[in-house]
Image (tube, rainbow, N blue to C red; front, side, top):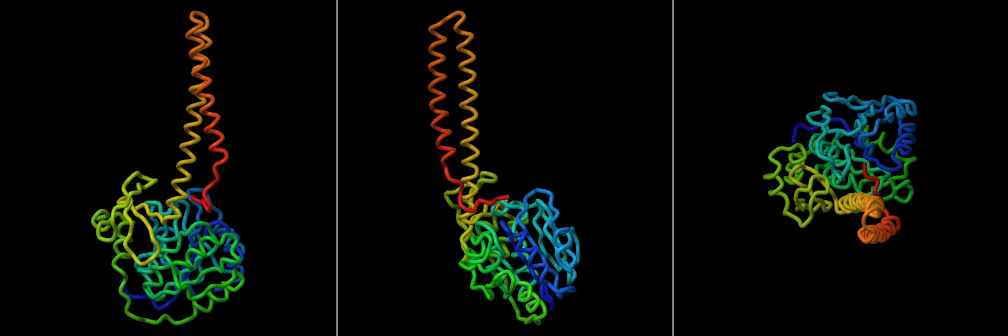
Length: 335
């Protein structure tokens, strides 16, 4: 690990309900906050005005992160749309690397970089959200001596992410949102205990895989091939051998927890079913049009074609009932 910083760094991850949570949080932070704050909010590739919203709500600056920035206290750095935000050597790095949990930006890449770059100086915070992005990253922060903070899931707008984090990590603090600003201010002021930290090998290798460094060799060193394929690229998913939260990763770097993998597969299945329904309806329409033309010359052929069209219509109707009635995956706020 690099030489450890002597000041605190605050890393926050949020998803569904996170914008409102952050608006409340920044309003409670004192001016000239004594540590830089880094935020990943699941926004996907959509344009975002989050930096302007947060800057207008609280007394500290809020900016969309740019490549090569050196973080400063009293500033909130927000991951840009469709980019992972990392901290390496005390400098912000932006990456269009593989999605994790079918999301970019994702929380886990930032938290892993925080664990490796800051060690005990890192404070990881998981706020409201669905599924479980942030759990593995918060586990990494704890493994490297950092502090784990989780919003009380009982009072979170979406409790799934905080609950998953609490399952994965023995959190140092579990607080309601109104108490979060005061807690982070106290943690930011607390001195960093300079203690030697050895990052777990699985963390180092997984971070290298996400960056595309000797991916297959690193993957073989920390995982075993599973029976699942990557829904993002079709490659084989390896199950990571680690005492932390269970997760899967392919050699191109896409990463999933069991829950995010199931949700992504459900999403793709739903899209495939609707596509199949469209093809069936188009085939029925084509056959009916063909039967109309055949009727001018050969009534028997026209009747056979029309019967085939009716059979296709029955199949399409059954498929439509299945698609419409199928429930959406719980917590599928995938970006």
